[in-house]
Amino acid sequence: MGRRTGDETRELLLRTGMEMLLARGVSAGVGHIRLQEVVQRAQLTTGAAYRLWADQDHFHRDLAIEVTRYRDVGSVELFRAVADDPRARGGGLDRVIRLAAAAHVQSLAGDRSRSSRVFLVALALRASSRCSDGLNAASAERHLDSVGEFAEVYGSLMRAHGYRMRAPLTVLDFAEAVAAMGEGFALQEIQGIPHPVFGPSTDGADVDLDLSDGPWTLLGLTIRALVASFMVREERDGDRPSRVMSTEEV
Image (cartoon, rainbow, N blue to C red; front, side):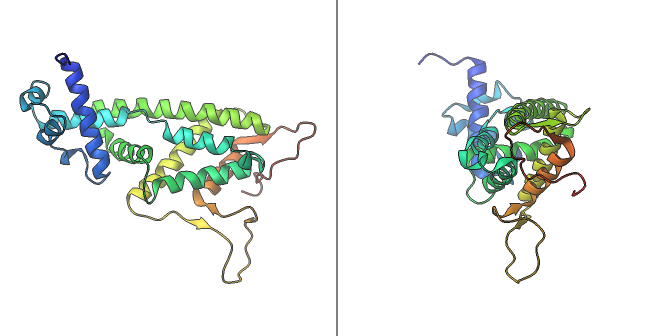
């Protein structure tokens, strides 16, 4: 193998540092990823690293930006997989919302996938992005990319189920609102706060929430309420309306 360029060495060390950060978890923070450890893991010399970064602080800054910018499509693909599942589509938009929200909540808890670990670590870094101009810019860029990706999926889902946005709201507005809720609940997960799930009552108490199709997460219910506020149903011949709450019910 030929000699690495400075850019190739930098990319290798940042990606190695990112994998170490993901393995240690969101609580570790970039400050616990020592450049000397990264160099050893990448099987490079210390001199190669210090030709790129003057000190640990400069490396940690670039590592935080690298993680924040990293594009992992796991969250989008998870939502798309649920939305495309015939079992979800057959139950209307309500079922898609319920199952997709539950899948997202589950992905953040317990044994997390790589994509969920990337999401949580990047989210924690973004929460402190005002501490650094470079991190703030990377955070804003990644947020816009993510919202755009989800807006495309939401738009397809709306068309498939016969919905349109209430003027002057746009699907990007809806995607921004869902992102704010999803990220807020994810920050609670980082803090160890369990996500509420509502299932059939075990104490015989009356329940007004329709749970005939299965339990609802709090995230799912809030997205369901957003749908009622942001969208209206376009009646089409032969359609059976999906059971989504009206604005009067919210």
